[in-house]
Length: 184
Image 1 (cartoon, helix red, strand yellow):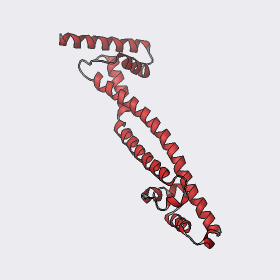
Image 2 (image 1 turned 90 degrees about the horizontal axis):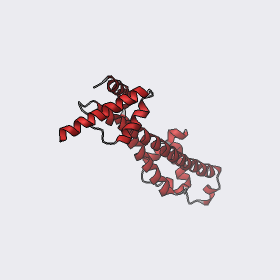
Image 3 (image 1 turned 90 degrees about the vertical axis):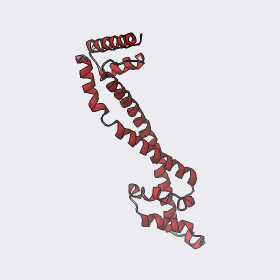
Image 4 (image 1 turned 60 degrees about the vertical axis):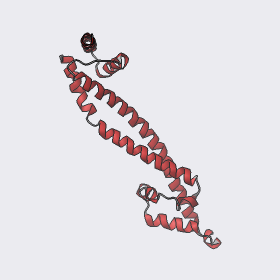
């Protein structure tokens, strides 16, 4: 392994150490997005559907994010379920309606934020996976670089000095030639 390869692999180590954590975070965010999407599809903007949604834990676990609590949520749902016309005229009924609409809007906003976070995490994970791929590959005795375009993009991303790029490409070419010769 030449000095340029050693320097590059040393530079890659801190970039890939958290790949598994990022992949786990991505999976959790995708699960959360799926739950939020199911909730929004089910309630379809109808405040009366919120209190009867099957996954109440999704709602209850989110209440602190809207500066609320279980008692306020349950009281609002209780008021909205009332068939008594006199209760529907009370200001508390109107407040309950606005409260549940605010909760629905929170989930709509959360869905958009989760979608953006997931896109960013997917990009980050793709980059870290490529970094890890070449970290592992370059730590082999004679690495075999199959995707030249990807490797050149990888080198461009991680090196700024032309001399380093040229030496890394020379190393890859030499290593690939050695692999070809061994197969013959």
